[in-house]
Image (cartoon, rainbow, N blue to C red; front, side, top):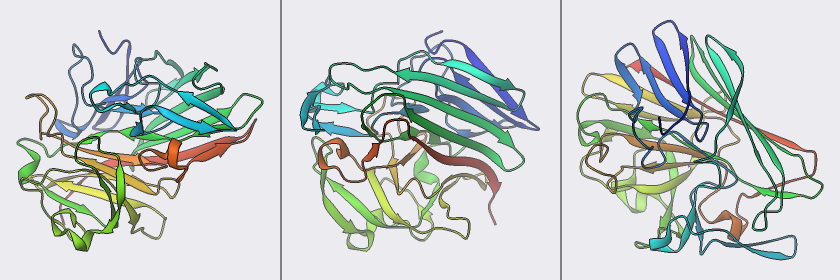
Amino acid sequence: MPSGQQFRIAWGRQEAIIVEVGGGIREYRVGSREVFQPYDVTAIADGAHGAVLIPWPNRLRDGKYHFGGSEYQVPLTEPSKSNAIHGFLRWRPWVATARAEHEVTMRTTVYPRPDYPFHLDVAVHYALSEAGLTVTTTATNAGTIPAPYGCGHHPYLSPGSGPIDDAILHLDAATRIRTDPYRQLPAGIEPVTDTPKFDFTSPRQVGSTEIDHAFTDLARDDDGRAWVRLRGTDSQVAELWVDESYPLIQLFTADSLGHAHRRTGLAAEPMTCPPNAFQSGDGLIKLAAGASVTTRWGARLSAAP
């Protein structure tokens, strides 16, 4: 299997499948209703489905960055746009630890390398409960020097059957990061009210809108959580929340994916920093030697009110 060993966790009618390759989540459903759009067990994950994005999420211009007085060049993993994208861990085998019926922890290590001479121990804990799915990511700097760090995840919310065009989207975010049309790198910020087609502060149909942008200035509930909600035509709502460690959520309508997944799921990506943060420094975490950082997000299925 391209995604390696499969680790099933369950709670009541909820079921999730975590994978060895990339340490991400391949499937999350409640009964027969998908919460996350899955990819097939016989397939290579496309569009970063369910991936863990460390040590940076999203794009890095020309794969270059400066840190600690030195310049580094990482491989261009999006060569057509001369970008490096989504960090180092998408194709690395992870080890499952602390397994139980309703939870599993996936672990891996980023060892020092010429283009990233820093040492990270990474653990992602997936747990199901009555409240839904909770994903807790902890990175520890196991090295002797500070390390640049960012974190993201790449689940796709499912509208149930049919395309996302017919679904109702709600993301109460006041600001969108504009990007250039070719390389999709940051080109400024603007209030969503300036471009109404990207304003989902009130729930409305996705329609034919193409989205591949990060949103910030997120409205939060009393628990400090910001929410993305995608209501399918079956009146079931796939919901994703992020805690305050994630100031941004990237939405991607999957227009560039192949026929099997094009516009059939909505990527809702928790991110600790915006695109190109390794160059700009915006939101970049400078993780001290011996220090750890923990971030949380989660998801659930609910009925429309």
